[in-house]
Image (tube, rainbow, N blue to C red; front, side):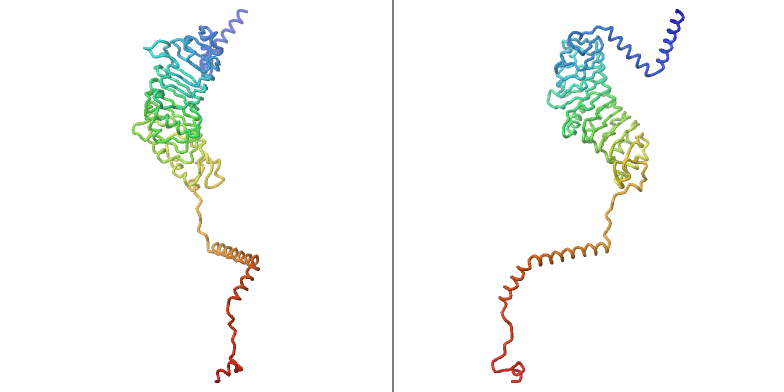
Length: 407
């Protein structure tokens, strides 16, 4: 029996060693240790909230109805040393000032250790300018799946002006759905112009219905001097832009424009992409490229660039010939990229068209005469009566014209 126990222990130890060498198992072990840590820690939210766990370092709330639209109700049970905070699936339409803690010189909760904050899927529409202003060590902020209406009133500025250590900002599907998503990107550009997120490395802006990404909007990203990855996937962009300011986005390595509305790539975009020294990956798949003469410059750039563009995944949505649809862009040759041209009509065609016109006019005239024949007869009779009788009458006493001539 003792031998069997030893064998089980050895096998268990071997399995653990195997797991250590496997990435999936390492993550699994971390998850187990995290759960054990939570289960052995004091829960400050117990008895106050049904779907929240609040320990010394972790706050987890999912679909908590007792918040009743007010996230500040949690502040009474959160400890100053919290590192990770997640509040999702609740109804929190507004984030007031000091929503997640006070500043150091103020009384109340101070979350200077907070590094991870997830406020996704909470129907957030209004954010105060000082909602997040006392989180100096925050590294990851997730605001995805909300309905934020970016406001520019005096108390709604400085959204990201005091999170200088932020490295990852997730604004996927964050903004209120409007008929023109360009409103949001314009307002957001102004927000970035006044930010101090100089350590931000990842910015996610997918699924926001942006219809344009203008040059001025692109230049506002120049404030994000450490940005490495920019995600603009699943929008409605037809003219992508990259900033034209000098020494801008010098650390950018990855940019994702997939699932947008681009039929061709602007010349300025391709030139700027070549100027970015560290750019390594540009994703452009699932755009409706039109494979005709308008795609010539794009086709040439795709064949010459050293940038890692996912070229094989770029497909034609239409083009010069109907058979191009669904084909890889680079499977076509340069001579395939043509546009329809109207040919000058031949002499035979001109004669045929002229003959048809005369025939139509003639038939129309005949039909008119037939339909109105009675009226035409009446008009002719009236006209005949008005014309004087021009018959020749000989003078009395003369038998004929010849007789008159003889006299």
